[in-house]
Image (tube, rainbow, N blue to C red; front, side, top):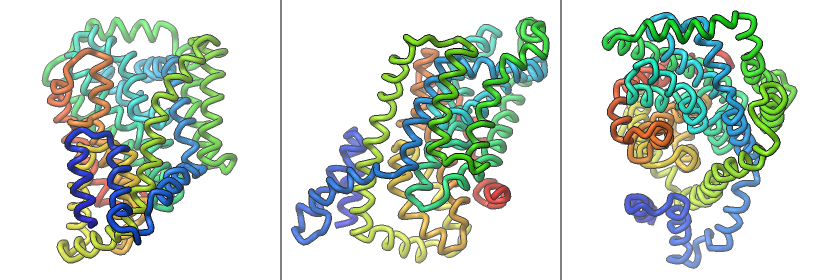
Length: 428
């Protein structure tokens, strides 16, 4: 039955049935086929409802709302100007400033798609006006947007911690150094690309001079409230002043106050459209979480995790080969499934397997999130590709082709994260 369920699930996804619907269908089948199976329709309905009865999950809609407000409030522009002030005139300075801006904005929103939309809509036109290749710029933002789920706070990390029984705070801390490493790897390729293809130094110099003409003090004061955001969010968590869920609520009010009264880039009439946009992002994610919770319980009752664990133990002989096999599996999974349902489904299955091999739970959580972050830029799902395409009008496949070298450097960082556990655990 378990093999049939998994095969049917894959088939339903392959024929473009929505993931939440697919999980609901396959969850019901065992109970219908066997009246003695405990996961009957009533049980599943309760599982779907209780799937969202988790305090950490409340942080997800709050961080989504916070990221939407920050995007509307042009907070990413303040960050970009501040970073450009220092490195804009260096080779590949402005493209690297985009990557660093994605790094910072990820620490504000916790979302890859929000990072791509906010940073991309503001920075890509600037780079294109400076004669950078439009497809390259779009691919750069699409890939760098993946940092939004690795640098804390991260919505996928909240989901993983809740499902796998890890500390959300520890997951956040564990993502700091891997996120910085990935950003550095992306900047290395960006530097190589700009050195190979050249840059319009005259136009770049004019643009940076406009920023520098304001003076460091003014640029710093304009970006101060944006730079303070991750300090408030993460400082309140690590300082023991707030839980991640409470910090998410704080971030909403902080973003709203800064956008309305400090930068004045939003007005009261903008609040309702922002709420509507946030709800449109939240509802699909929460519905997937609810159905994925029921699906995970059915898999547990069918003893799929135990069977898969025995198969992996018999097939792969060492921790290194197990981790390599899991990385390959997760990379493929990220290509065909969105991050949230993927984590809810695989975390309960794979976490006990690797824990038995001596892998730290937080370290493995970071491996999972980094793998699935690559899925944001790999077809056919590739959410970041579609967001970036909507911002620039560049075809999705063209962006994907240009993103390949970036992804190779992303994979290098993934291997370091996988086999150097201290990178994820040394700050704990």
